Image (cartoon, rainbow, N blue to C red; front, side, top):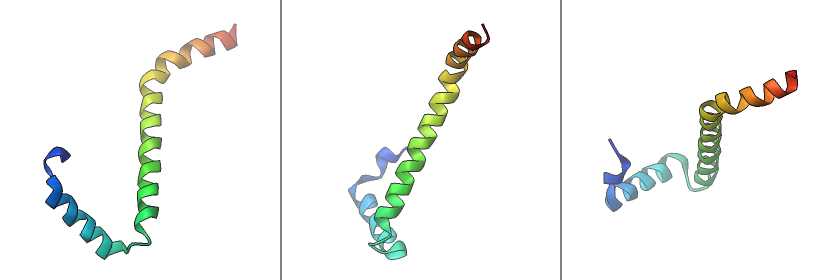
Length: 64
């Protein structure tokens, strides 16, 4: 289910529910925590995908 089909009304409803659940003071903290988690996840997946190829070369150089 892609997020592109939510629309303005759906986003507004989500924001209102989040405001009711967490309050306006907690929302920036939750947004920052979500952003950090997402960036760490992206970095780790990039490391796993490209790390296998890149890690083998420096390790060989260190051994030699």
